[in-house]
Length: 193
Image 1: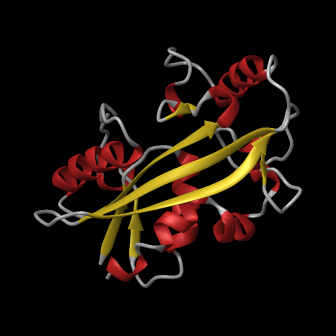
Image 2: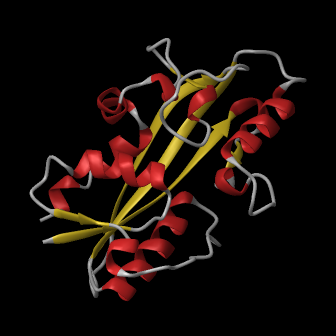
């Protein structure tokens, strides 16, 4: 049996492949099956966006498909960037570092600690069947200096509660026991197979 990871984000692919490696299933990416898709994330929630991606990739590939939508919610900014985390800067060439810099600049007027959480909605869809989904979250705070060499997105400035480490300082094994994505994806394991 094959499962398609519905993303071209290399960081997400590495994390999800690592999570799914404990299952007896072949893991494929869009490029592995010749797909190059852009799905407009027009939903108003993480779950709606994940469902949009799962539906398109599942129909196009005719494979069991795992999609997710993830965001960072910062309390001092009333939940921003939230579902717009990957599109925080309206520039297709913006980098993760650009997004982190913008977030830190918006936080400067606010007193620390800058409490935050990562939220992930993961969706599993088989062609022609109803989707199943799960949510995961990870609490922490934003710190003003980048730390760590792993991860992607906002990981280098997100200090994970109870660890004294940023998400980018965690090993893949640590991340897979703590992260928002790990919690959501692992909740779907009973439906894979």
